[in-house]
Length: 273
Length: 327
Image 1 (spheres, rainbow over the protein chains, first blue to last red):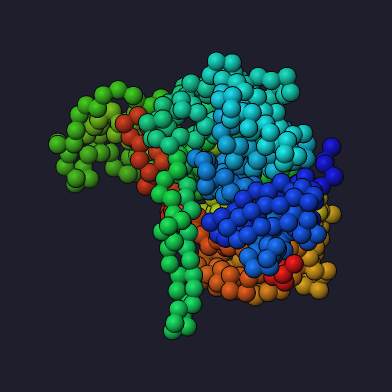
Image 2: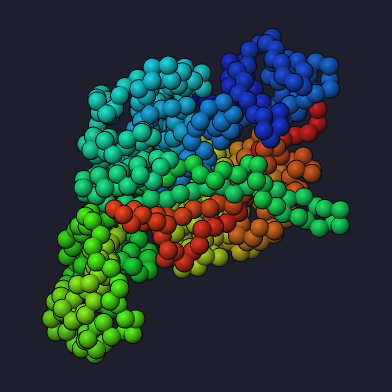
């Protein structure tokens, strides 16, 4: 069953919902709304009730009517941007490529290990709504717990099973599914997990591994060939940010935005069972 | 009958249906729905036959090219003789003969022997495979034939993510790439999708997604439609983007996502500056999508060198619409 209102389509800021607070381009944060709640940032003190009374996408002023923020609907892209400031995560170029090449769509059954910061998990869940399901495994108990709480807070718990598990030891099987449409691995030694991943993938199911180092990719590809995976393909994908503004002469000047640019994230290897 | 991507090994990609005959290299082959996906076939007497898997050499490097003379005389067979042998004895016999008549084959390293054999196989054995017509595969296939009328898959995937496209969101599509964007959005959603039927609108690619042009899931939009209806405005066009957004941005609700693709950096830059200057959106990003593929083989890992498409997948400007009156 589809929840009454999907988080990613929220138009209004309702109590207990998670919305995004846009301070500026480099400061975007999630906020859980509470009736009569307050929150503080460098622009001042903000009433939750004032936010709740306006539609998302509004400019909202602080109590002294000077500083302001914008309220936005939670999307996986804003969420990823929001948490990228505090932890190492997968970025949007890689996430988009993973979702697209794994062909995740409404109804997909997807398996992920490890969960990490759940930055990718939330994008995966968005793509498989309303009836699909993500099974995500994380061997770090603290992180697994945190991810579980986040899924509940975001109201996504019907579409995700989050478990603390070492997949290298215990594999990917789960009573909640029989075959996976897609498997994603972000592990230090993915080559040790691909055989177990193959067991739970459906025929023609898609696999993806993410590794920062080329030596990891070589070992993974060798194992994929040995296990008779098809269409083995390794790519590196990046976003090159630009800025554009009209200069004193009235011409539009377009320049690379070096501060925002990332030169390497990792390699994505795709394969089909 | 559904469409598939036909990949001729080291050759072109095209969209075909699994019936009748298609040309692979210099030969014709009969396609049928029984073919397996993602497996390499070899054409034998007009019929597809599963090709045996290739082993990759994983040992030490021996031999070098000190004895090579680059005067094109390494192969002692003439091109007439090569065609003659291929026609009378078949591709595999020809490759064996080519190796026997190559003065340099035995001097080559294991790696370059493997490369030599792979190239000859691709050329003379008429190898091909069929792939599922996923949105990414359809986009890349069309891009490889007419880049200006398509979108590369990396850019498509980013565009859809930035557009927040998912099952029950209300999407307004402006498609100038023959229905590839509309088809992809329909595949990622479950309800109806609204499309602008503008002057250049074509939807000949929709059939590859298994969607009929008159599908009940497609509705048509006019600029006069009620304001603030849509969660997502998604555009792929080579036309002036600002004019498109000026017309259709009012139909997007506050906090809805704007996601616009073009191969023209100037067009996205104009939109970028306008959205920021007029405070029509926040979190406005202008970016180029950059991707490259790697050959990963033991001792031979490097970026692919044969990509004719370059590393740039085009430009995207994106943002989240806001209303600027103060609350």
